[in-house]
Image: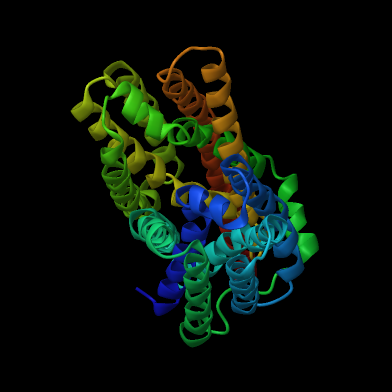
Length: 404
């Protein structure tokens, strides 16, 4: 593995930890700042808004610079944001610090995916992206549980301070291991032209719909496990740890399978996701089956992430592609909002905790239909390129015959 990918994975680990660890520190932050738990819960929404706003904005600002330079600048923002979170004297300043931190999230993964592709041969592009994203999944396995423990035993401020240190380590790794010439300087006009392509919008829509299935279920996974599967609260954390292991294995497997099968893998993956969630809804009251199906759900869902991320860059057909890559990160957060909102809607209607699972199954099936459209567009594009190459070869051969 190129060491530059390790630096990107460390950065992804820090970003994943800072995004999700707040969910485990809500009571401690509320007590420390003298506000309600529900008020602290709004930090999660504020972070998501920051990601959606910052992904295209900061990527557009950095498109003229080499990827390494942009990535280092983004990690400086990350480090400052977490340091300010650790020192925040009031709730309002903590909200501002969290939004500042979130601004770089989507841009880092967007530009990082382009840089990861540039570090390897084209046929290993999806695998390279999966290695970077593995840092994010490992955050749920190790970073978030450790951060929650530190917040409970010592201080939530130490957690944000420790994440800021991870930011400094990432900056050092990027400067030491990511070659200065990695990737290409982009051109904003060229990057924006990618959004005229129907195929780009197909992939972005696929991300928003297909991955909303993940968040429709995961947003309510704790009560699903306790109320439906009948597990005690003490078992929720270990089960979520297993879910994190599943997402990590899935991400790594998806990188290899994506390089081999491309968009066809996403079609199969979303269909399998829908079938898994259907089985989950039917067997959720059986503890062992619920745990196994939840882990399988995490494995399959995350396996598709690197494939879709690489697919949107390829669909752009422009030099660089960091802007559409970042837009796909924003689309993931839109999927988060859609899935969580639809899950909340069916719960508010009194349909019970199996309802979000059924919503997830339906969203995955809708995503499968969109993935079929993406695959059809990919094949049409490949056929067009092949025809152009054959036409060019015929023209060259004709000129050579004439010259002879």
